[in-house]
Image (cartoon, rainbow, N blue to C red; front, side, top):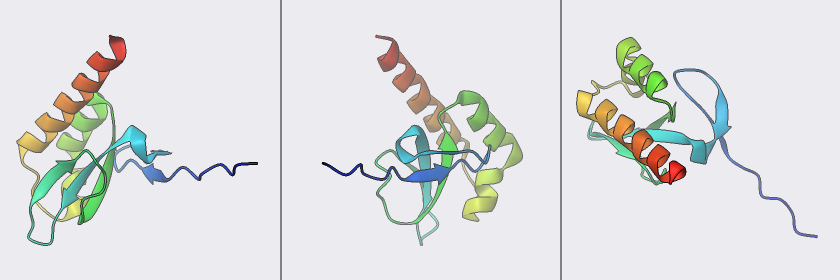
Length: 95
């Protein structure tokens, strides 16, 4: 009988809820202080996870929770990219 693989859970830094890793978006800060969205979830660096919800991303932008978690200033482009990824995924789901 095949064993079920354990699904890795991660916590959203905004809501505090735990979700399977695939249901969250990862933002990474490298050692050099570079910040980017990591759609693969495999890039090296300090990571923070955010729920795939526009409201949660906007809440993260307002509360600066990602800046505290990653110890770096988060440019608006990062939040805009997160929202674009969420919208694209919703469009694909609805097709």
